[in-house]
Image (cartoon, rainbow, N blue to C red; front, side, top):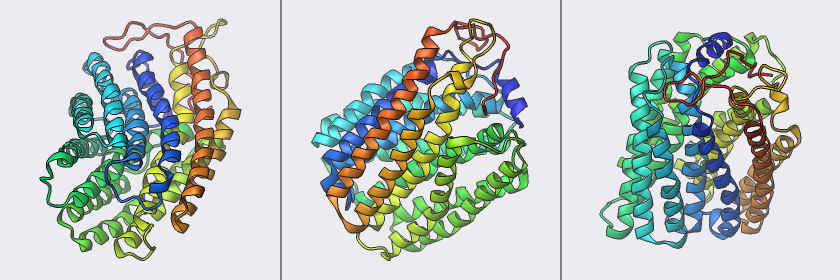
Length: 443
């Protein structure tokens, strides 16, 4: 699907702005809290191996607070466009949000203060919210047929989400009953399903839509795209099996196949950019390219962590590269594009027609965020390498500055969204019907 087809199909599937943006706002609040929590947990962060406490709360502020909430907000708007099928209804995703919001708060608080009751209650609320999202995701994918590769990634993310939630509940219950024979192995499988399964598959799948849209290019070649999907799925299955069975050979095999999957994906994305009509993609693609570099080295650090070649901090560094280096950096690079794009589809200028995307948000907060984000990641990596909690705290303070800057950028978009005239939307269940003007999302 090229950019024009994407934009044309978007016209009839626009959700009310309050639906995706409530998830984005909550994710930005978690983004700020993440860095605050990391300052508090700096003493335990550099050699973190699991277990309830501030460090575990910090990790989950990133995974379920920032990554998952953002992914849901983006998926409920972008997936119907990609599959050319609208959501069956809007109310379930609203209900999912009101289950996830207190669920995430209770789960994170329970982890931070080591309160098993809060953890179990929060996990159950999150489970219900994620189950509603999974049901909508499955219903949409069942009716999809226009982009089979993207749908395949979506199904892989759906299956990963179900297993991720199941293992998460088991881990929460195990803190009180101790029924798991290998808590650490289940925790590793939980991390693999979250990072490479649910979030990873969504990131890889949506790249087949978003990167061509931003670059004004055609979608990647189907044969290579299927090969990339097959390699990614095989690596995921082997990784989860290796974690649950405690078989290092399976984990090593997962990393080796992961090298192939990453190489195929990066080659496809390189081809899309080379063939695109738009060559200057700005600051957002600086972050995207950094995330791709992190994806490329992720399997290599996985091997080093399994084999113990990189010292005691190798597992923590591996988690930082996966969750912070690849997924979070990719997420913020993409958000710089899709937030003003989605907002612009909901507003019109007083002179008529949609606003320029440069009228929404601001450039300076994005520059500050990019510098702080990358500096914070580098500082955290160095802190892990030399086991320096004070350096981790300083890096987290820099990251906090970046989070506040990005929150200011989102606030600017929301201000424009609230102040501007709102056209009506044609999406089933929406309150408004938008006028048929469409901005260029790559501008």
